[in-house]
Length: 101
Image (cartoon, one colour):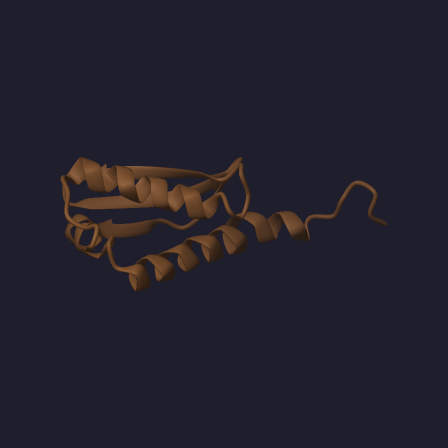
């Protein structure tokens, strides 16, 4: 039985938990900001200190229907982790350390 459907708020809570769980696999200090838009959309952004990722936009109906689909969840988890690495963590790795010459 697929885990899908739910009210707008239930789906938002699931989406925030899902995104947070996968973002924190890259770094435990990454946070997820989830904005509710008109009761039909969600906008999410990963944050790490003063760094912010590009926004991800989700349609409520799509998330409600697809959150029980393992392939969709796997693809979304990969996107979130890649977003965290490329936009939040890679700039940190590129900065010289205080002991660098």
